[in-house]
Length: 149
Image 1 (cartoon, rainbow, N blue to C red):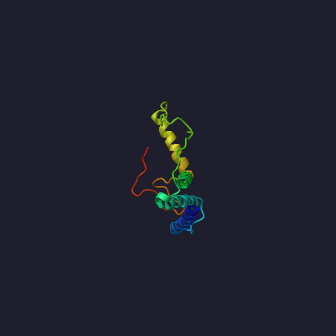
Image 2: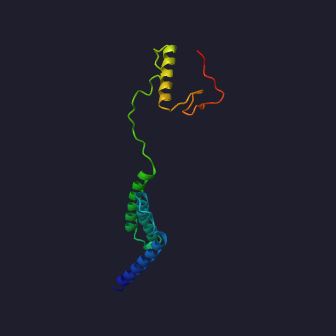
Image 3: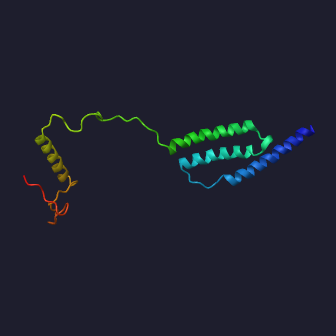
């Protein structure tokens, strides 16, 4: 009976010591955002397990294992936030297809490019050398002369 009382007193002292250690390691002020909460929960279980482990031979190893298991599960949840997953992407076209159509002649290709340039100019995405803005000022690269046809 005396041994049980001594053991109960030891456990109570150990619990108090663990509580003191946890108070030193756990920061109670943290941002309430998902990743911060997950990190705080993971740290709670991890530091609690480490504190119990520091009890040495008297350490409750089953409880330590459970706490480390919980910390590992929360670490896995946290990793999903911190590390991007590689997702399969559905491509709009064949990535191995030739960039330029093989059946186009050089003249057809030039006309296609010029049509794209004109479309970009109309959308005001592209300004060609020598082109003027609404104030009559020239825009585009300085000293570049448009090609004569």
